[in-house]
Image 1 (cartoon, rainbow, N blue to C red):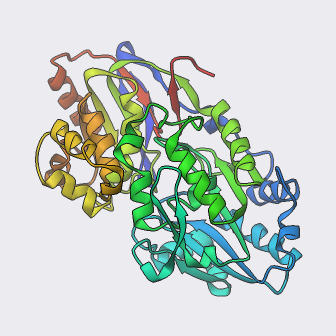
Image 2 (cartoon, one colour; image 1 turned 90 degrees about the vertical axis):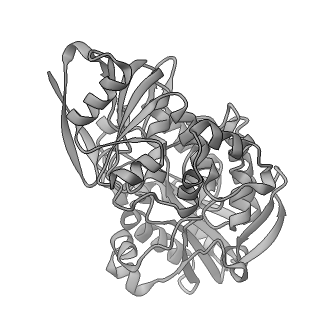
Length: 428
């Protein structure tokens, strides 16, 4: 037996796997990196040497109204690390500028006061103006034409009317946008719901280039980059994190060029070679990305790259926030098999995309390939509503998985953090 640690909520669970069944462990090399300097120092260094443009303090000169786009509670962006040097850099260039921190919630629920305090710290909460984006508040949105895909581009008014728009963020593999960070602070971050829905349409989600690690000819990414340009995003500060949440890399500057530099760095660390197995054990890397079923789809999607057709995925996701989306839940509540749900979703035109259908689409693609045994704190009925099999311990999940295949000795691949790796045929 060998023992392995799987992130779960804010802790981890130790699991024992028979050595003769273990295919291997797919783990990002990023998690072996330790920062050469502390996070604030790396961010200040990036701000001092921006990629593809002038320093932020120069951009801030003469600007009266500056908006900083900040991620919400669903992302582990270390705003306590990024925001102080970012604010200092802006005020070095323009001490009198009015600065608003706009929380880029996308279509997520509003971030709570307690979550904001944990994210930024009490000092920033007390001193800075913070506004939550609401994708459904039409008074908060302004039209900026159409996306390349044809959808209407609706953007938060505060950003559209600002003299300077800046964003913070972090870069990780993203299961259909290629990578997080950069332009995603605008779309979906501060876009109207109709804009997000069209960008996440079924045809785009099914496109072969809508996958982790791919930006070239990625239609989802192209829309996002266009939206960032139209919204006037002029400068980004993005970081890459190891498994301890430490900043190991920071890039700042031009929203496209600095983001691509960060993506190139990350790609060298997180590509892993596919290890097909009868059973794939995976997590979402723990909190905050295992708060609900909606987010857990990301890890399951990575596991689906390795599980053999008809096999089983054992997903660890604490899911203290429940299913994570009412519209997401209703797509499954209507009933029907994963194939039937897929058929309904794929029949919708881009302009008819409904909330959360992309997440249902990807989960159903996973479920048509393999059974999912879901280890969580959820009530079993809720897990079953999403066509998954509930379990509350690894031994229980392993017994269920073995029963599904009829093979008590099926091979096992472990992916401790499914969000942090990009599965390819050849390792980088």
